[in-house]
Amino acid sequence: MSEMILKVPAGATRKHKRVGRGQGSGYGTTAGRGTKGQKARTGGGAGPYPGFEGGQVPLYRRLATRGFSNARYSLIYIPLNLVSLERVYKDGEEVNMETLFAKGLIKKNEKLVKILAGGEIKKKLKVSASLKVSKMAKEKIEKAGGSVA
Image 1: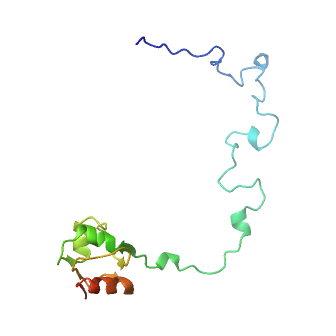
Image 2: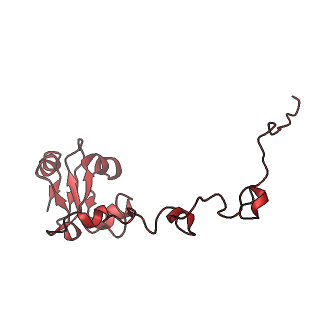
Image 3: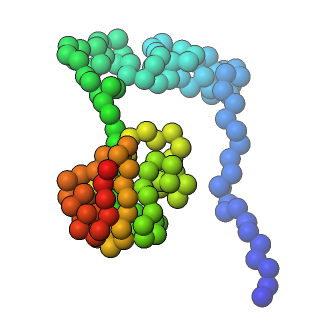
């Protein structure tokens, strides 16, 4: 197989445009920026900050700011389906925060876990009281012979 030599097509490379270098260059005086205005000034390209609307009152200031959101204080549970427990745990094992972390189902800093009824379970597992368990998941675990403390 012969070596291919890559070549740049003719006219693809141009000389660098040197602006602000005198009248004879064609880009002197205003350096191709037009006359006056925000975009003619240094640092005036996209506005002084994101959301700037050219002096008009920006959208984030026009919208109402009333009310209170409890979102930052809400408790967020990590969902775990029964399929995951069936895959990772052996028959008769205990399911708690330590074993969930050891088996790689949750991260170390996770505090709240809820076991959901996704999938089937055939192993007898002892689920710890520190975990939240949905009603359907509890029924499925107990039907398989396990227990939820």
